[in-house]
Amino acid sequence: MKREIGSRFAPSLMLGQVALVTGSGSGMGRATALEMAFCGAKLVLFARREDPLQQTAEMIRAQGGEALVISGDIRDEASVTAAMRRIKENYGQLDVLVNNAGGQYVAAARDITNKGFEAVVRNNLVGSWQMTRAVADHFMFEHGGSIVFVTAVSRTALTGFAHTAAARAGVTGLMKTLAAEWAQYGIRLNCVAPGTVKTEALGRYPIPPQKWNEFNRSVLNRMGAPEDVAGAIVFLASKLGNFITGEDWYVDGGETLHLAHDARDMINTEMFANRQRGDRRHG
Image (cartoon, rainbow, N blue to C red; front, side, top):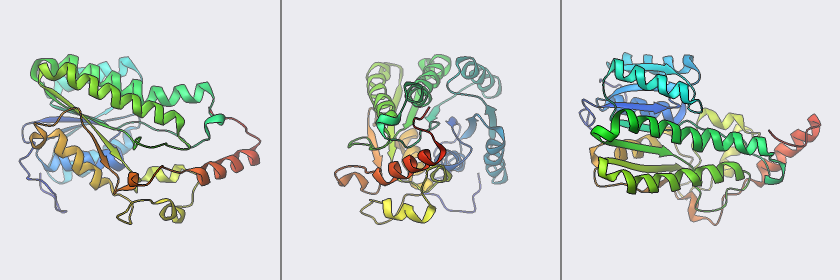
């Protein structure tokens, strides 16, 4: 695949491979899909909304790459199974899975309802498990492969994100267990944990864009870019990471060198907005 913007990797790094990237309609998922396509992989783009996926596919095809768009929900087993059938019909193989889809909202733990907590856990943990199990069953138990989970920096407290802290820690534990159990099948599993990354998702939080620099705790004095995370994912997913499994890579610009993630100002902003609306609980 030709590319107008340079890459960290050789254009033949993933030649002949098929890679599935969930949540690939924007942000880190899109950046990862573009990087893998540049490296020669055929891409399967998966998310709930088809329009953003088509935009990613057009970007890949415009540079000479190949992409298959599948709209679906990682939380729905039937949707995941249908995606496996389409991949088998179109490509007959799947070598790489990037579990990037997920989501959360900021709230003090005391304001998170059971329903809200379960929704975030289902989206981030259960959905990742369903996709991972399906890919292994349909493809990787027979031929091996590489699976990368995109999680979150959970080495310290994630103030304001108790639900996603639990879910992402669960994903990390799942990854390490599967890395031990599935090594016999030639399957490698790893996590990439981004710090604060400048993506469209930042606009969903109750913080003006200019305030994000104040929350930036990177010792490199900048927020991450989606391409920073994509580079780590491609390394682990490709043959460059052939002797790496069960690892949890932090791509945070040194953010976790500080004692703890602190979202108290974000919580206070959200609580004020809730009071203005007359709401008290999330979910």
